[in-house]
Length: 260
Image: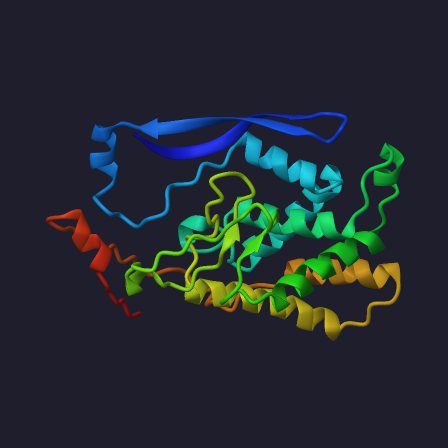
């Protein structure tokens, strides 16, 4: 038997700060392993993101309503910039949520009352947005691993991993066991575009006069008005590439190029 996924379903925090978590594990039998894996396969296991992952983020962010507002704003920006979507090699909504959770945890105070949320100002929200872009524009994505709970995460290295897997993907670790890389769909090219997107916003804010609340409100609108640098012409053709092989091992060593 092999554990395919492991994540908490119940978390209990006692008054003395003792924490107890009950985990569920999903296992594959031998026949399923043969179908899905090959011997000595070095792929990381598929991650499962669900309700419990989001709950863990909400506990971490100190102020869930403000976190949700920030996440909505950042996701809107990412979509406008064409930097959103795991299927396209960019960051998924879950990855953006992890990044927003870090900013909220670091720069927000715990909720004391509902009135404190209602009194949250444009100036404070602008400060959060600015911290988001400045933090991740400066983060060394090519070398460092980002995780919410550094003490809980122990990096896993694969010394025999083929060179083909060194795609330069961003490493954003899921806060729930088994601590998979939630950004594994990215690669060097998309990683660089995401970093350029962060830097573009920082440059915009540095060149904008931001003093009054109105200035900050206008700056927030300007960020959402940014577009990607890709051509806006309609797509005239679609190329479909079908890869086949006699054995699953051949997929691990296939390299291809496409030019347009």
